[in-house]
Length: 305
Image (cartoon, rainbow, N blue to C red; front, side):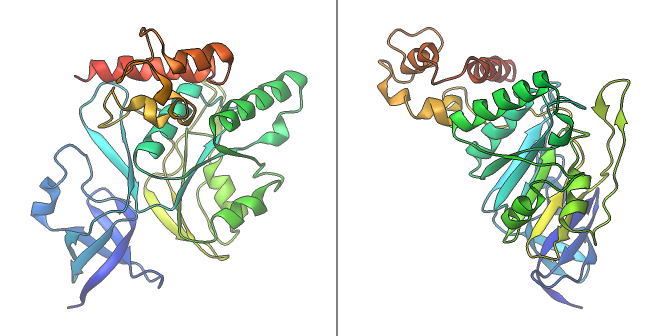
């Protein structure tokens, strides 16, 4: 019976595939019964990217994580789900239309990356569709919004290949999570990055202008050019987990830059006099859209208490 340490490369409910990275030779494993109770607040005690100890085909121990990304469904459920662990970066795919990625979704995802110490890169896909002046303006506004906040924003088209080489270079080392709402083109981008991969590619549901789920399970793939990527099912909602209202503003980089100048500490940046964040809002260095997202998250956090 073989024993050792390996990385979880696929998660299908109660069954897993492991591989001793950088060797790519996946083999099946299940969780020892008591490990199922280890994550009392999460639906999955083990996530893709986790390093684990195994005995034969049984996972016996989860090794400490350097980071992970976690979400709660937005229906006020108390359960949360670990999307992936031990990441070097997250590529958050977004689209301006077909479907439209909501800013509130983007901001909640970015706050989670900040809170758990993961580098996010925003990747705008389907830019070949944004030819009309109104869409060009929306694209420019979106880029300015997040670049001004301090984030790296890339423009690509998985269909035409524009910008794909830049994404491939980003993913060449370490472990990259691909995530985003349904229908933004994660599987198409993976196929463009490495034609030897065969992720499922789905259709957009025109009736709701939302993508249909194409990836059923969380799965890691080795890229032929180097590095590993984790493909995830499309996410329709992203709720915050274990982030206190008092610390929420520290996960907005543009607020963090000025909040030391607030008159009161702690400051909620809502009603206090002498608030540097509200002054930055009036001056235009904190955007109304991002500030509105912050207020929505504050309200959401109070609902969970």
